[in-house]
Structure formats: structure tokens, C-alpha cells
Amino acid sequence: MVATPEKPALQDSASISAFGKARSTVTGTPLSAEEVDKIQRFWDACNYLAVGMIYLRDNPLLREPLKPEQIKRRLLGHWGSSPGLSFIWTHLNRAIKQRDLDMIYLAGPGHGAPGVLGPSYLEGTYSEFYPDKSEDLEGMQKFFKDFSFPGGIGSHCTPEMPGSIHEGGELGYCLSHAYGAAYDNPDLIVAAVVGDGESETGPLATSWHSNKFINPIRDGAVLPILHLNGYKINNPTIPARISHEELECLFVGYGYTPYFVEGSDPESMHQAMAATIDRCIDQIKQAQHEARSTGRAFRPRWPMIVLRTPKGWTAPAEIDGRKIEGSWRAHQVPMADVLKNEAHFRLLEQWMRSYQPEALFDESGKLIAELRELAPVGDRRMSANPIANGGELRKDLRLPDFRDYKADVPEPGQIEVENTRPLGVFFARRDEE
Ligand SMILES: Cc1ncc(C[n+]2csc(CCOP(=O)(O)OP(=O)(O)O)c2C)c(N)n1
Image (spheres, rainbow, N blue to C red):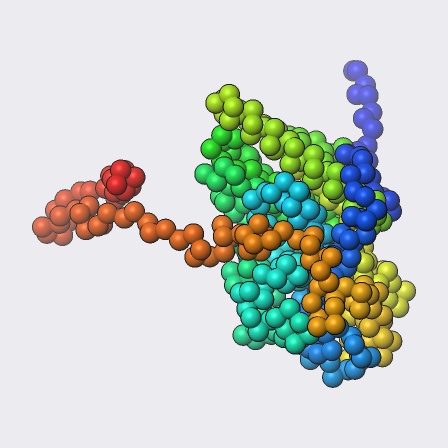
């Protein structure tokens, strides 16, 4: 008998750290030091708002020392996903501005709504839709207080949220919705953030294959971004526990070109993310140009990004000796006992002040102009894009009168008619009209 040669065991990635300087497939430093600084501060503002929404009901810019009565009685919301979601948003904004892109954003982990509501408020869109949440101290206070409050702002990316076509409460449908939006929308790029936990659901695991149905001439593009923050509530995710090679092969097998961006050091992560998004947009535009100029609808190997960061990125590293940033404990409210624990209460204030709100917002409470300039304007804002704002592009359905397709039934049980055939005729006529 011939002995089977021993295969080397697959490397386990439990040791792949989400921390440290950026490691990325695309290298390069496309940003100036000034751009890195501004992007960082815009993201700080997003993170500040996310924490504020989860914890505060008053004193929104901490203009006075925090008091217990300014904390919400019931703390509800998800911090863990939020910093990654707003990090991605901030970087997509740069690409939109630079290239005048028509782009929308879907947050698969829709429970990370604070990470999407924040940028939408900073871009001014939220206040345009909801004038009581104005861009000043008073508006920010209402914005914080109403988050996850009965009758107020939903804790997930609800339909009422400007720019949201995907709620994300039931995990699994992000890519299906994203591809649905891209079909027949040739100029649109749909950025679709998929949670690594979400990626384990049946619907999501199947929907990677939707890239097979994209026609690069007639349809827009989807840019999937796997948000690999390692945990799904209390457990590690499978994508975070397989080797780099296996993960890469998985997405190559699905027909994508995967680009990795991994780490936590802000400066190098900003450079890596900017360089990677630039590459992805170049690749999308190149494929579309090739198909549209030749009339050949081939299937490109569309780009996708794997973003590995600590869960709850920028939260306190540890509380009472227990890891928070980069751990499952960051999933929801990292310190749910701030009203009972004085040390945690102080730590919350310290955490919020670490984003330096006084340098991000002006006297009135509005984001300072030099940071506001980072966001696109008008309909180019992902939060204001008409494609993602219910009712703005409403068209009447072309519907012939269904009564014209009815089956005549003179007496019960006398005739046999299929239901699908008349329905097919109905649809065919509808398309003719
Ligand atoms: C279909 C479904 N199953 C379970 C849940 C409960 N749930 C809410 S958040 C979450 C973890 C999601 O993890 P991930 O997608 O990685 O998002 P993140 O870690 O960024 O919060 C789970 C399992 C859900 N919302 N939907």
C-alpha cells in the first residue's frame, strides 16, 4: 500500500491580528498629510456622534462636565459595527468627490445605524429631511435623544433614514438588494457593506453569485466590502477564523478580485483604504468602458474589498482588565452600567472627549467648514441620492386592467385553467404598453 503523503494542516487565522499598521493588497500613499488629517477628523466626528447617539440625551457637545441625568435611561444601540461603517463612508465620499460618482451605500449590518446616521447628519441631509434635527447644538441634542427612542429614530437603517434602501435588521440580504439596485442603472455604483457574521447566513452566502447576472453594458456595478471585524454578537466568525489564503480563494472562486485592507493604525489605514478604493473604481470603470466601447457584455472579475479592523474600533481598549476594542464585548453598548458605575461613567466621558468635539464643531454646534468640504454636495451625497430616497423617482407601474385577463367560469368545477398562462399574457402585454 502506498502511504498517503501528509498534507500540511490549514493555517488557522485566529492569530491574524486586526490591530497594527495597515497591511493591504494595494499599496501606495495617495493622500497628502493634510488629507489624512481631515479624513481622520471627519471620521472622529462620525464616531463622536455614534457614541453620543447611544448614550446621551443632553449636553451633546460636552460643553459642560457630563452629569448622570444627561445619560439615557435605557441604552440601546450597536457600537461595534459603527466605526467601520463610517470609516468606509468617509472614504467613499472622497472617491465620489474626486470623480463625481453616482453612488449609494447599503449597510448589511444595519444595526450599526449610528455609523450611517452620523455621516448623513454631518453632510446636512438628515437636517434637510428632519428640520428639528438641525445642524446646531439644539438639533444635535434631539438627534441623540431620539435615537432608539419610541417614535424616534430607529436603531437600524430604517426606510425613514435618508439614503437607506436596506434595513439590515434581518441579516443576509445586503448583496441581493445591492445587485437589484444596480441592474438597469448603468451609471450607478452600489457600495454594499457585508458583515462577516452576516456573510454566514444562507441568503448572503448565495448572493455573492449575483455578479454572474451583471451586464457591464446595461447595468451599474456593485462594490462589496466584507466588514471583517471578527465577531457576530458573542462569537467569532468563520471568515475571521480561516486563513488568509482560504478567504482569498473563496472570493476568487466567487468570481471577484479581492483586495485586503487590514489593521487599526489610522494613518496607514487611511492611505491603504484610499489606494484600494481608487483601484476598485478604476477597475470598475475600465471593465465598463471595455464592454461599452466594444459592445461585448463579458463577465469581468469585479473588485471587492475585505476590510479587517478591530470590532468597536477606537473604543477604550480595556474596561476592568477586559478587552473591549477588538472583542465581542464591543458589539452593542460597551458600558451598559454607566449609571451604576462611577468609574465607567467617567470613562465614557473620557472616551467621548478623546475625539475632541470642541475642535470638530463650531460655536453653534455645526461641523466646521473645512471638514464639511470633504463630503459631496446635493444629490451626490450618498444620503441624498434620489435612487436611495423613497418616492423621489416614483413612476407609475404600467398595469393593464387585470379584469381583461380573467377566466370566465360559468359554473364552478366546469373549466380547467392554469394560473401562470394568463399571468404570462398579462406581463407580456404590460411590457408592450
Ligand atoms: C438572520 C439574522 N440572524 C441573527 C440576527 C441577530 N444578530 C444581530 S447582529 C448579529 C451579528 C452580526 O454580525 P456581523 O454581520 O459581523 O456584524 P457586526 O459584527 O459588524 O455587528 C446577529 C447574529 C439577525 N439580526 N438576523
